[in-house]
Length: 72
Image (cartoon, rainbow, N blue to C red; front, side):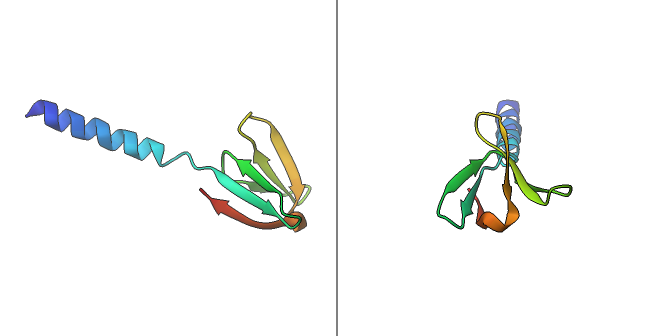
């Protein structure tokens, strides 16, 4: 019985942690699709959209170039 409870607790923990990491697709006005590993944020100083790609590099694009952002 204890094994079932422990397996249930571990399974719920894994599901909870996997829900925290979301990728986003940024579609630009010219049709490019960019993938971000975390939620893109607006840089208050430059008013540009800042995101990190799958290689860990930080990028910025003008907010006006973004058509929409989709969570995947």
